[in-house]
Structures are given as C-alpha cells and as structure tokens.
Image (cartoon, rainbow, N blue to C red; front, side):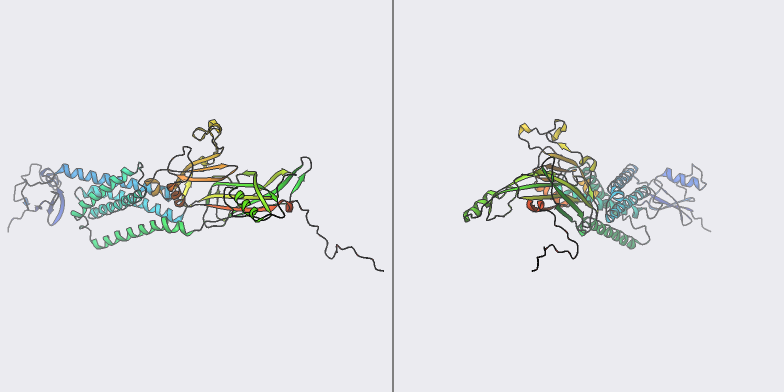
Length: 501
C-alpha cells in the first residue's frame, strides 16, 4: 500500500492565497507559512512541523517558500474599498432620509425610501468587502460588493448629472465627485477579478441588478418629472362691494368689501405675496367731445395704473386713479390646502363728497406649489420695514430716495433632496408696498437689497411652480349709494287706484 500525504496545499491564486485541503475538503486558506502552521496546529500537528515533509504535506504550484501575497497592498485595497462603500452609504442615507420622512408626495417618499434601502445595501457591501478582501469564506461576498459599487456609481452619476445643470459649488460636490472616481476604480477592479464568478447563477444576479436599476430610474423620473406636473394648480378669486352707508357722526361713506379665495386646484400651495388695492376713479365728463379728445384721453390715461389698459371712452377723459385702501389679503407664508377657502370682509371709508365715479378693486396673489419645495415659514413671515434703522440689511432710508416697502425673506428647500445637495440654497423674497403691485422672486443669492427678475430668477420661478392669480372688479359709486329696493307683499300693487265716475 502506497503512502499518500493527507494535507494538500493548492497553488496560490491571483492574490497569493493558498487553499489547504484535507481529504478533498477545504480546511482553510493561508497567506504565508505562519498562517499554514496555524491551520496545521488546529489539525493537531506540532508547531515545529517540517513543512518539507512529503509524508505530511503535498505542495502544488510551488513549494513552502512560494507565498506571493503582498499584504500591504491587499490591506490598502480592502480599506479603500470598505471606506468608499461606507461613505457611499452615508451619502445615500443623506439623500434619501429627508425625503423618506418629510416629502409631501407619496412618490417622493418612495423615492427617499429607495435611497435609504440603497444605503442599507451599501452597508452590507462594506461588510462583505472585508470578507472579499480576506479569505472569501462567503461565496457571494464578491457579488454583493459589486452590487454595492454599481449602486454607488449610479447615485454619484445622478448627482454629478444634476450638478452639471447649474454647476454651483456646494459642500457636497467634492464628496460625490470623489466617490464617483472611487466607484469607477472599484468597478474596474471587481470586473477584472470577475467578482461574480463564485455565485451559483451569475446571469440571474445580473438580471436582478438591471431590474433594480430600471425600477429606481423609473421611480425617480416619475417623482421628479411626471407627478409634479400631473396635479393642476389653480386659485379662484372673488371680490364684491356691498351697499354703502353714511356714518352720520363723521360724514364718511362706508363701503363694505368682501374678498374670497379658494384653492380649486389639485395641489396645496404656499402664499408668497398678496395684495388688495381699492382705487377711486375720477374723470371729467363731456357731452360733445371731438374725435381728437378720445385719442388725447387715451394717450393721457394709458399706463396710469402701471399697465396699459387699452381703454378709451368717448365722453370721459382725464382719468385719474387714487389708491384709497391697500393691504395684505391672506398674508405671506400661509398655506392653502386643496379645497380650502378663505374670506375676508373689509370696510372702505371715504368722504361723502369724494369726487369719484367708480370704485375698483384689484386682488393679486403670488403662490407656489407645495409639492415642489418647503418654505421656512417661521422666518419668512417676519416683516422687515425698509425705513426702520433696526431692519439691518433691509434698511434703506427715505432720504436716499428709497421707496418705502415691507420685505419678507426666507429659505426655500426643494422637495427633492437631490436638488438641495447639488445646488446652492434658494431664498424667497417678497416685497409689498401700498401703491405698487406685490413682487416676489426666488434667487440662489441671499438678499442684499436688490430687486428684479433676471434669467436665473425666472427659471427658479418655473422650477418651483410659482404662479400669479389676479382679478379686478369695479362698480359705480352711484350704484353703491342707490337705496335698496322695496320688497312688497305678494299680490300687493304699488299703483294708486284711480277714481271711477
């Protein structure tokens, strides 16, 4: 009977690791002779065993001195792989956590949950990377690491793509740019080493990875493109003057005014700015004007209210408009949910002998879709008066030619946290003044006193779904002063009967 060695040391693999087999079964892996002695010690062999003894050991692909492992390089690669996966996990959780628990739409919350779950997979991949960089006792560790690297590459590529749209520097930019370069390096390394070859069915694994990527992409596209545009946004405004009364003690005319607003759209909104303005129209009437008077009146009256009305009257000229009452209707920073309505009653007072023929009301509301962003309402609701020296950067004294106005200013967060991480902070600024139309704009720059809309500000208004609703209504003062009609009982005739001969 021949004598066969019962401990077989297999040739080193691409990393220098040698498999130790006893009776056809793997009992361990060794990087060095010291590691082999530890395995033999667990099998009951003495510590000073002669590794060249052919009775005990059989060497394949090299002898007891063939240990090509470069431990320093191997440990460095493992540490870099684990560190990149952990950093990618933190980034995915940072992206998804605010949306998963704070997004206003169901689709965006699902999108946030997907990023959080991706972070969990990246955490598992970091643990698997320790085994994959070591003795690979778990067969699927390489495939799990590959899946984690693919998720990291997809996330970093998405962030990079969104950053290129504006190219604004944020603290997050160096992070995902570095991780994008890391993910390319890690993917190259894993593909070169065919990290998936140890799993039983690599084709099914690849199909699962592709399906997961497609579902994630479709969810993101739905939440960022289709869903926000699917719900319409609309406000219905109404205004009505009531019948006037004369205050006998003061000799003033009191005109009731009712303002009404309702969210008849399919999405909640933030009110960025609003204003109502009651104006009295004065005019000179002429029974026999010449044709040239019509043209002169049109030239003189056009643009008196800040816009060209395009109206001219044959018997009325020298139109003048005087602001009688002006103020906020609902208030900047307030929310209006779907179907919610708000009504306010106001009394306009003017002298009984005021030379007005028509009263008009202009109601303007500037609002923003609530599903596109989150407004810091506590900060935004604080009014800053431009004439107040304690207003800080909002202060602009009248002696410098500044127009007195009230300024509202606050931070705005996009409802998709991907946008918040790839762009500078956005701020909403609303400006109100009694004799001017309310103004509001969104800017990537903190307010420094400048106003007006540039191309970037206009693009921001479209991105956050900012719109304006306006209505105007006018009534003659004679109609408001007319006595109410007398209601007669049924069957009663107001005609005086005539006597019959």
